[in-house]
Image 1 (cartoon, rainbow, N blue to C red):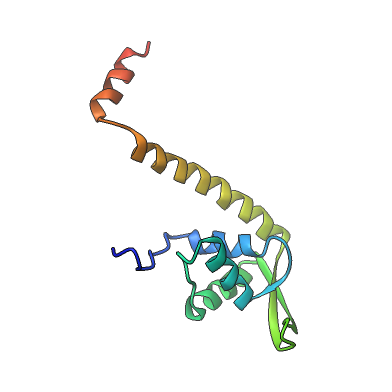
Image 2: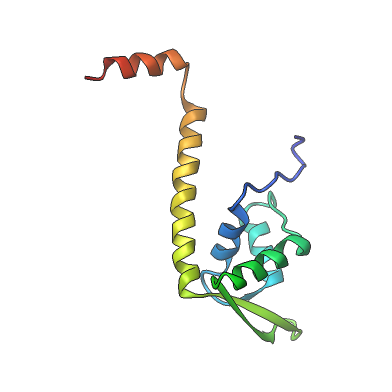
Length: 124
């Protein structure tokens, strides 16, 4: 993949990012997308056609709630916020991601497989 290409989000990653974006305060969809773009250094740019179906799905699952309000530009916008179940799901997804990324990182850092077998054989 060329360095300029946007990587594909792994399953479940979008939910984690959206829930994390809503952790602090109610935010409209454009704010969620902008937060994701900013914190990932532009690696993940979430388009409306991906973001809004995810927000609506999270709302149907009871993880997010919404209400109409005014954006900073005084435009009418739907603001999304985490429910208590959404906060619990965010904690769960964050723990799973930490475990997952730690395991993948360990695999990328580790050397030759024979060293692993030697370590395993040396254990009592």
